[in-house]
Length: 370
Ligand SMILES: *Cc1c(COP(=O)(O)O)cnc(C)c1O
Image 1 (cartoon, rainbow, N blue to C red):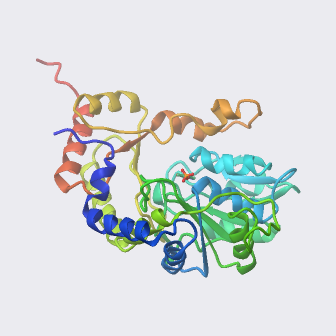
Image 2 (cartoon, protein in one colour):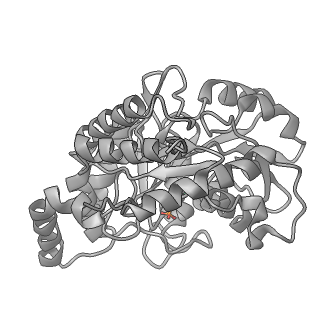
């Protein structure tokens, strides 16, 4: 039986009836933008993350970008980001008009290395934007400590880490503000685009509510040159259904991740390393091997779908070619060594064992003594 990397219909199948009911409720309401569903979702997601405020926006990129704008971070400013992340982290900074300053990750946790941040700080630095990559919280305490010492904002990119915990506290409430994505493949995924900002900063939240809606609090009164970036009622209603199951799904992910770790213990691949004091939510299960391309082709032959997150490091993308970058050897190496194995809540233990067995088969020495 082939095992796809991810099948979104199967992801949503357990909630199909509730989702249809939620969508019908929105259709019947006759109110499609900034209504009761979005207000309710914002309240529920804020409570889930343990923060005072949640602002629904159109997608994860906008969430990060609007936080920067709300803090007046732009032209002439620098923002420290991980060299190893989805390009949206970088684009949020670039779109705000600020300069991306990449810092290398720890190559076992994949997250920004707090020890390397200090050296990247200049008088123009305004913020650090750690990413909780693949669902594992970045090492926030030393990051926040460095930021406080230099008077910098800490903006979490929590797009892959809904519900993850760092020393008991949920992502989304660890820094000054956080951006989430509800892209369909994320742990909390909508049936389209969606995003949210979480924060305990009341003034920031109030400004963001205007920024996402044409800079307006009172209809047709525009105090800011805002954006049109709203989470719509339909997606909010869907997300409310799925949020109720997020903890159970994240727990199921942890079981599957442990099963992969056990089954692959003897495989010559680098398994994910969990930082002490964190509870990852396993958005992806990523292994490292210099034989990545061969392994990937072998698994594909056997009907096992894999993906690479990410195949081209951001500083090597055409979009960022016009700038000169420092040597980024870890990001440059990871792009050709990382492989994301099939990972989804609908997979069962046998699926995981099948994939793991195929990984082991690939590395099994062929018997040349006939
Ligand atoms: C998905 C993602 C984003 C962007 O989210 P969109 O909703 O696709 O705009 C940002 N950062 C990271 C790390 C992501 O994985």
